[in-house]
Image (cartoon, rainbow, N blue to C red; front, top):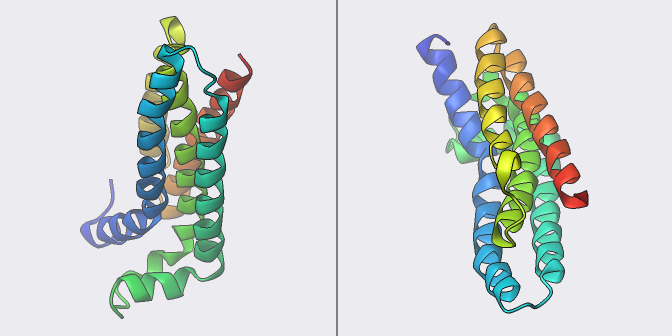
Length: 168
């Protein structure tokens, strides 16, 4: 969707933003077997879920704040001093917010799967978000900012769905 130079800038900045997601995956993937085992044994699982949400939330928040406050500095450090990707540093905060919401949604979805509470039609709804994301990102590919905002919009909706799942 983008010319090669712009695509490279987006790819690099997106990879930096994905640090939030990569860190959260370690927590959520660790939570899954523990909550699943406790559920199978008839024990309470809510405490492990709360711990995972808090750890992922706090870690993501700290990284996101840093990305929002110092996007150019982060990009410059991670790119080993290169200035090639600085033009795209303005989207790092948007991507940080997106990946934070995605990370939190992932914890909720994995928890619900681990306790057999994500079944039927509810199991397919996250797939709809992927399709929506694809359509919106194609539609809003005129700039890196609009592309990133489309990604953020879908993650906001998915996060709201996750909150609804918690209450369900």
